[in-house]
Image (tube, rainbow, N blue to C red; front, top):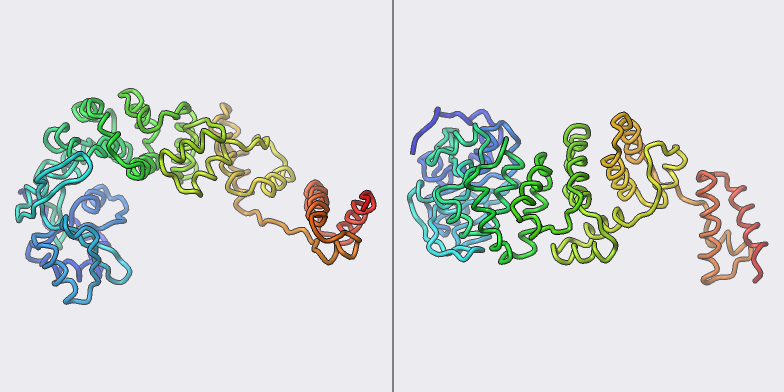
Length: 417
C-alpha cells in the first residue's frame, strides 16, 4: 500500500471537525487502526462536497462498540453481523465497518469474514475510485490505482468486472450512476461490456434497491448520456422500459445543470416517460415509488392545463391556484424542455419565478355568509361555494368583500330551493 503526500486532506473541514476527530481517535485512527474510506476520500480529492463519512477499521464490531461507547459515542448496530455499526455524536453519523473479505455471494448479499488486511478489504469493493483510504492526519492510501482512475475520471471495476457484478448485481446500475456523476468521455469498455453481459442478474434485485439507485443516477449531470448508454446495452429496457422520451430528459438535465443549478430526480424520471394514469400506476408499483412521488408524476403526466411560455400573470395565477405550485412548476419544466426556441428561456424562467413568490389567496366566503344569503346547509353549501369560487378565480382573486357578497346573492337568486 503506497502512501501519498502526507496530510494531503488535512485542509478539509469535515476531517478537522472535532466530532470526526473524537470518533476516529477512539478507534485508534492516529495509530492506523482506523481510516476514512470511499466517498469522503474520493470527493475530497475531487474538491467536491462530502456528505457521508465512512470509516474502515481493523477492530471487530464488538470492539468498535466498546471503544466508541467509552468516549460517549452512541452506537447503532445497523449491520453488526456484516461488521457495520453507525456511530452518532453531536448529530453527526459515521458508518464504521470492520475490514472484511467476501466468503460467499449470491448477487444480492455477501457472507463476510473479518480481516486485518487493508489490501484485501480494498479488493472486495466495487470501483477503484472507491477503494481509497485516508489516515486521521489526511494522508491518502491508494492500494489499487484508484487515484489515477479518479484523475482520469474513469470508473473502473476492481479486478474482473464480471466477478464484481456477480457479487452484487446492483453494481450494474452503480457503474452507470458513478460514470454519470464522476466519469468523463466514454465509459470503461470492459466494465460496459460486463454490465451488458450480466444485465439479466438485475431481475434478482428488490424494487426498492433499483428505485434508489435509479433516482441517484437521474440526479447526476450526466444522467441523459448514461441512460442512452444503458439503452444501447439493453439494460434500460429491464429497469425503465417506459423511458421513451430520453430527448426530453436530456433537455431537462441541461436546463437544471446549466441554468437553474438544481437537480430533481423525480422530475427527471417523469420527463423520460410519457404515460397515462394507469401507466403511472404501473410504473409506481413496479419501482415501489412513494405515494408522494407517484401522485406528483401522475399530476404532471395527466394534467391538461395549457402551459406556454407567454402566459399572462393573471393566467399564471389562475393556473397556480387550480394546479398547485408543484404541478405548475413541473409542467413549466416539461414545456421548457420541449421548446425548440432557446430565446424563450427567459420567459420560462419568469414563470418559475412567479410560482416561487406566489402566495395562495383565500376566498373571503364562509358558511355564515352563505347561510345569511339563504343557502341551506348540506351539499348545496359546497355547490354554491364552488360556483362563487369559479367567478372569483376568473375575476383575478378580487379581495372586495362587497363584490363577493353581491356575486353570492346572484348565485342564490338564480337557484330554486
